[in-house]
Amino acid sequence: MKKILIAFAILSVFLVSANASNEKADKPEAPAAKINMTGKVVDALTGEALAGAVVEIEGTQISVFTDLDGQFNISELNAGTYALKVKYISYEDKKVESVKVDVQNNTLDISLQSK
Image (cartoon, rainbow, N blue to C red; front, side, top):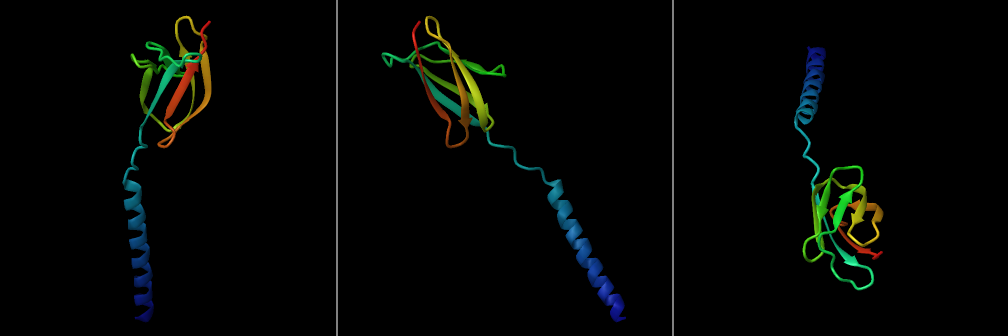
């Protein structure tokens, strides 16, 4: 009788732990938070805001224009490292490598040189 009770106790512990691990596997993980990258594009010499500059993320089809104050906002990014290309008429194109985007680093100011 003692052996049957020990076997039953071991079996019970095994079944409870197996059920607990299955419950964890059934729950979906929360999606990664999306991040907005913001910044400003200005003239390197005067500091004047450049309205209508194109800011694009290389390797993607994501691109935005700066507003009248030279501000841009790229929304719904995953945390990571990106390469940006900035273009504006009569200015040299600028490539910005290794832009790290996360919840703490999500602002970038860019200055362009006129041609």
